[in-house]
Image (tube, rainbow, N blue to C red; front, side, top):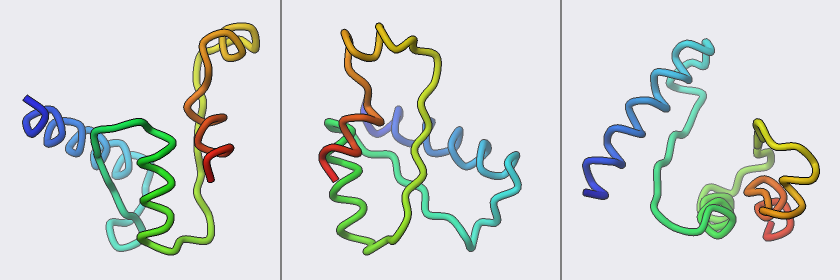
Length: 78
């Protein structure tokens, strides 16, 4: 199940990057199962990147404070 889901999500991510005009040679796409902040932190360390762009969507400040935020947790973990 995870393998099928990973492949489907990778294709969706690649399609999004293509639609955004991000050249394949200028991007690194990764779909990984796990706690997002930890996965992002491992990815940063493995690639030695200098900049990571994270996006948040659709939560009010109250929802983010009560439910948490992957972006916030990723920044705190990094």
